[in-house]
Length: 255
Image (cartoon, rainbow, N blue to C red; front, side, top):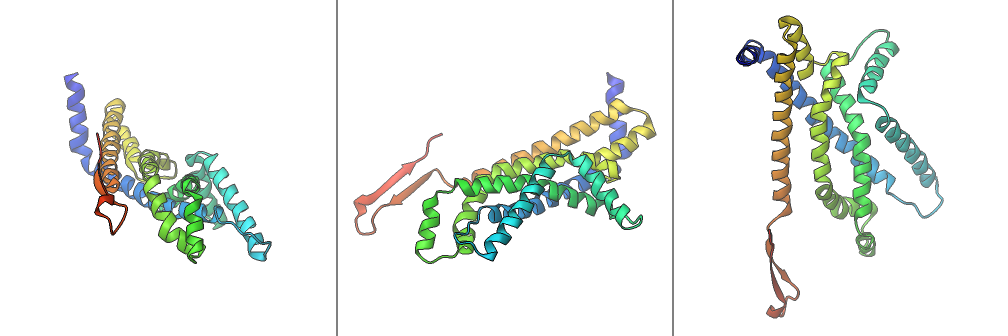
């Protein structure tokens, strides 16, 4: 047992630079991929929840775009990211006569479009959950659909789906490991390199396992802290009337 921990310490000290490079690439791909995936999800979610009451050419185009988005969501939610990575990376090489994309950029692109398919359904569900009376109220004061979405609906949706966004980010940190099939140099890629150099397979992957846990645990705690901050204070005052002080209701939240 003592020798095991000695081996683990030697891996950390001898290959620490490689491991840190893998952590940096993993966090970069997961973070940027999640942000781009959220943007894709917002655009598709808004598109799929937009309704046209009259049969116009715009409505026909909307139906076509909606159908394309539905196919995109089903395909990328119904196939493994590893397969998507192989098809996209080597598909581009096949179409371009052997030229390949930069590895980190490819990893970000793959994670983004995969995450976007999940985010689209998360955003759509968040928009649908908003009370219809808010849409009707916005229309009654002359707000356009775009204004209603940007000023009323989306801020509420973002707050409601923040736990799901956090979950997708944590999942992406782990799922970047599949990108080693196209040579992206993330944590798992360097684990394979180190294991081949020192032939200490169990010890090497034990170190990698601990690193993944530290990353996901730290990110989860940080994002939960952000969620609590967005919830606001638990003690507040409701003003029911501007002219009557008796209309003030003080509310104190419990544990």
